[in-house]
Length: 286
Image (cartoon, rainbow, N blue to C red; front, side, top):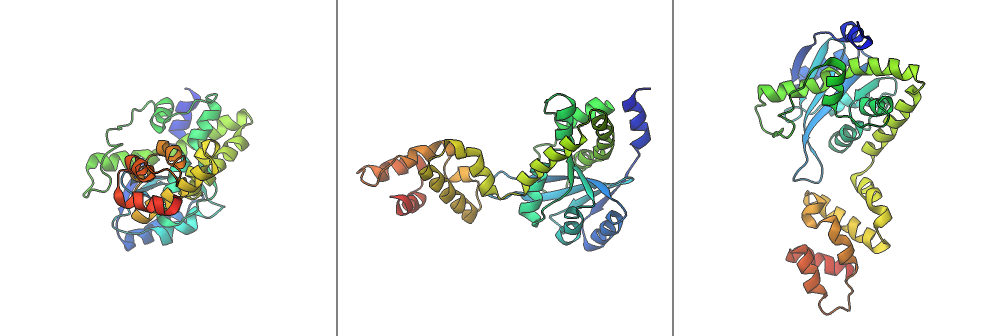
């Protein structure tokens, strides 16, 4: 029997799942989480037409139970904050930056003490970035159903396929962590895995504005940055993605338009295509 097979038999257990949609359910979840020093977590959300993500579900796995929290029906912030911000409790994620971003922006929770199985697998597979489905396939030999990846997570009721998909996303995290930990200890890379996990976590906990600016700072002039931050403020105020105001590729073109240019308004309007936003831009920069 292979190491992976033996570990799978040792750690993988049938978990009972619970749908949390009211305060009674949250109280039950709080009682259960208080019994554990480690749990897995994932989120489902929509982030197509708003500045901040819209949180739909939070899925949590512990040794023998799975929890699916319907965040459109109940707010878990007060319950989850103390567990997610507790440095003594280890939280297992796949691609923690994304989930930490959602948790920090939607619930004002700054998660601490995490292990990212994607970062760990990157170390173990010599720098290859693997999807959750691929890691599960490699470890368990199971092909996860991924047809619901881009489904409408804000629609209710959820379908059976959506619920199964969401639960699958956390059902294997703890077992994968146990296997990876053993392999990382063998290769003296466990500390590195925690280091990179923390780095990704910290990025997720940063403000969106700072993250987006950091991503572009090398190619932005001072004026570019001013326009970029102005657009961020406007997008946040209107609760739309910044690209809905104008795309990143237009920032440099807008930056080059001078107040003395007699065609300035026409040029700005040609790029932005919205009279109100054009007027605001001219008022701020020209």
